[in-house]
Image (cartoon, rainbow, N blue to C red):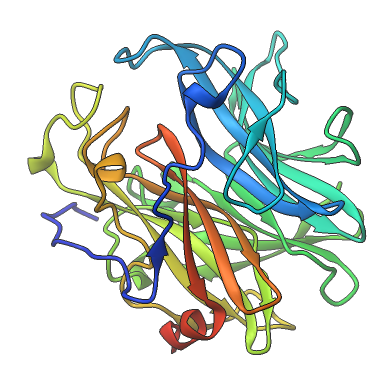
Length: 330
């Protein structure tokens, strides 16, 4: 599939960005940090918890020294306190780094999905923790797979997740990838794989898509975000890299409650498009929105946490009824 010039995109009117954005940035960390973004967020043990990707290097240089996963807590989901040290890091002769965490609470335990760069491809991992001090890694996928997010409860008796394998040969174009579903009896062995959403079905993408934040349960089905990419060669250099021609947006879809590989509704426009300076003009990679956390409050409001420009972590809010109304039947 050939890339083409992309149109101007706007966020949906029912979405409100938090006026205090970004909610977290490198200056908030009490240890070396350059870019803080792509966080997973959940409510756990009576407070908000955030795990975030931290790339460490020199400002303005696209080559980084290392990556770890940091931890922050909040009482209101708006104001965050970063803990004294990172909470998770994987390195070995084979594994280079872990990054892009996602959090889901299931039966009172907190599970973290994450991506792993290895010498032989990108793997998706699942770990569990009760205190964010000790993690048990339950599974690592075969390459190449990432962007995994867990559903917050078992479906038909099995754990379930969304994921994004990226088969270069199988799809026939280097960055034309899709959202898939898999399930597991124990979070270790995965199968039952089904296609959820093909990139060709997203009107505002001309390249890959992938899962965003873990789904939330609503009266109409599983509401979940995804990320989408469009490529425009005319963009040239944007950010620190010699060439950055991509734009990332946050999308929204509604999945069937019992058969969550079936898309019941799809928002035909981006939920969040890069518009603010901290999303579109400033930082490492401009024109980037990457949703990683979504929390539904008791009053029906929904907090959507997203990485912006691969540099900072931000927040937007909307009412769940308005989000459901965006998902047109397919």
